[in-house]
Image (cartoon, rainbow, N blue to C red; front, side, top):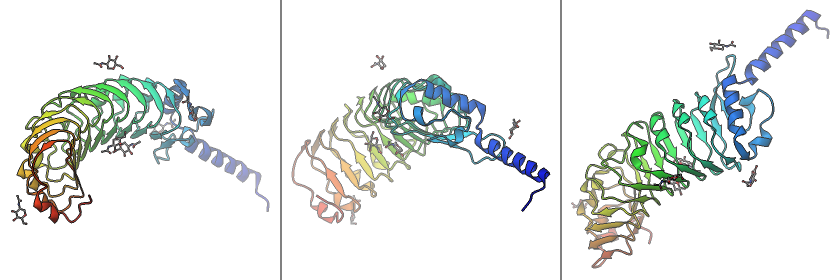
Length: 317
Ligand SMILES: *[C@@H]1O[C@H](CO)[C@@H](O)[C@H](O)[C@H]1NC(C)=O
Ligand SMILES: *[C@@H]1O[C@H](CO)[C@@H](O)[C@H](O)[C@H]1NC(C)=O
Ligand SMILES: *[C@@H]1O[C@H](CO)[C@@H](O)[C@H](O)[C@H]1NC(C)=O
Ligand SMILES: *[C@@H]1O[C@H](CO)[C@@H](O)[C@H](O)[C@H]1NC(C)=O
Ligand SMILES: *[C@@H]1O[C@H](CO)[C@@H](O)[C@H](O)[C@H]1NC(C)=O
Ligand SMILES: *[C@@H]1O[C@H](CO)[C@@H](O)[C@H](O)[C@H]1NC(C)=O
């Protein structure tokens, strides 16, 4: 069948418009991505990111579903790509970015201060790289809900993360070189925190009585193993009524374990091995009906296992 020439032209124009409006990304985002790739010295994206302007279709890049003239990059997922080199400050120009995952690469150097202008970022995963230096930049990104900096070479203190991360739900800074006191509060301004993993660092302090006060009803998992924390557990730890995992092995905690442990009715894992706890395990463990794992070896505990343990029907030994 024959199309009148005019309609063909119209179709071509329409098709051309459709293609260009959906494929070209916002020019600032394009520059930011090219700048980011430009400071890398290795990695698959250097080969797979084509030399065109359709950055929303590039490997690991996702844009907002916004179908207007130019789409904005909202998600960058480049885990395990062999990326090497430093993180470019130009990445901060992706100012609609909500999700950034650079985990499992070989990135080194610090977090550029410019990244504090990523004012929509909710998920930041830099875990399993060789990044170093302080993390103060992150303290300004108060939209963050999930922060994973684990297994890097970061240092500084917990207070470097500030007290304004009021949307934070998951915090994992395990396996770094953080040090010093955990300060009066561990919740860094969030009353929503569910998971805190500070294990395998060099934190050394006693736990302040008010340390959990801002997130005491939200906390589900608390991991602080393999640090140099000391003193007796603050009684406020037994007010964490949602707690399912309490893991404090390989520290220098001392003192008796309180019978108030029976407040933690949701507790599934209790790991306190390798500390200086003394006295007997309190005879209330049987009240913790959800308990699945108990590790209390290598302490100065005395006496027999409490009889009430027999009531822990879920316990696997
Ligand atoms: C370079 O990146 C590739 C993936 O693109 C990866 O297989 C390789 O291990 C990386 N090399 C180094 C030295 O990081
Ligand atoms: C793109 O759309 C935005 C609003 O959605 C508008 O401000 C801007 O001027 C448009 N740009 C072009 C090149 O049409
Ligand atoms: C923190 O890390 C940086 C970068 O690796 C290093 O220069 C600095 O000496 C470290 N500071 C401390 C106190 O370990
Ligand atoms: C980092 O932590 C976040 C939140 O807990 C999690 O969703 C993500 O899978 C973790 N990253 C890796 C590489 O395990
Ligand atoms: C934190 O990250 C490490 C790996 O870097 C992982 O093994 C650990 O399970 C994570 N912690 C939590 C609570 O998810
Ligand atoms: C433990 O459970 C028993 C039986 O349900 C109850 O009588 C007792 O008060 C509980 N003990 C504590 C310390 O909550």
